[in-house]
Image (tube, rainbow, N blue to C red; front, side, top):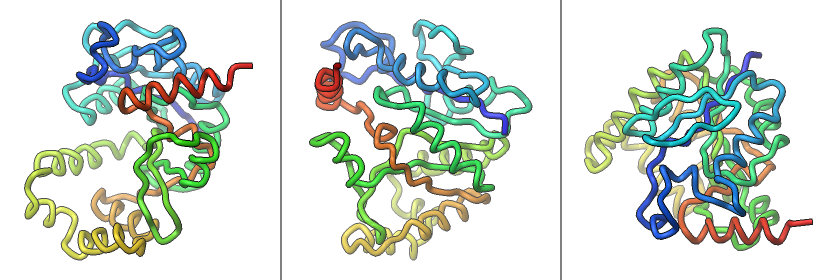
Length: 255
């Protein structure tokens, strides 16, 4: 299987981070003296089966050694498209990683990739159980969703077959354009699914398989959730609170 990776480092710096200094983007926020994205990149480069890493950069962002650089777009989907365009033609699967996963490990990446290779889906989305997350990062801020199988939070890794990107882009753009239009979103997702989603949120009756089925229907190709027991793939720096938590976790784990 031919793998490449895309590191999404093109996001702008949110206002709450600006008092920390002048940075080109979120990827360059320092954690223990090192740009946050560098931790992610080091883990990606340590995986032998990843042939290249394409780094999507913000305007004015400095390049990271060992990567192929490309400029990001105005939206997350556009930036992903820029990364997809820079891939080698023979790439079968691409690992997409967010730049704000400072604890990402080689083991977590390889476990995720192995599960992706065992399925013929076109899109893979990582998620982690509350139990695993809290055991590794007690007190970390996460948004958990209660499903029939338990409580989970989303991870910062996805896998995608490059050929499926146009379909993914199309549905992502439709959702983004209609995010404030309830009736349009109902037409996109279907009333029965939204009803199940609402009931599932409060009653915990929505299952992983139902979510996979609806995602596959919307995309027009199989989509699969990948349950990871490596909680490092889900610790992402969203705000100042999680940035401080990351620094504290690093200090506690110093030898």
